[in-house]
Amino acid sequence: MKSFNLDSVDSEWLPSRCVECDQDTSFGSGRFVNRVPTDGGFLCVECAALCCDRCNDPINLDEDITPADVYGDERAEFEDGAYRVCEGCLNFKEFKRFNILN
Image (cartoon, rainbow, N blue to C red):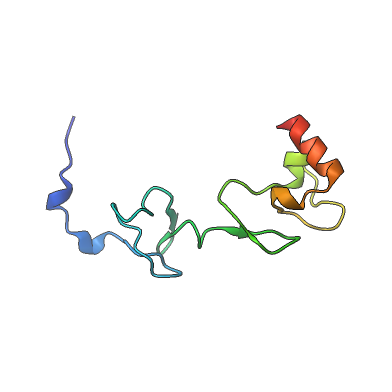
């Protein structure tokens, strides 16, 4: 197996800053593991967060809840028109169904 030595790599071609907020996402920065690739480089985890359709608070990666997560089918939206919500914004009925399916 061929080994790869990072010391010999010209780091100029490696994108190391978030394309939105310019935070360092390089190895050792504390943001390397959770960075999200984009066409122009990487996003840090904070910039990659999605907004809740009900409260507009940021939702961490992979923590958003959609109608498919609650109802188990391909509904286009919740009853109020929201599509992506945080767990705190689920109403009692939605929360109960979400916990049954997950």
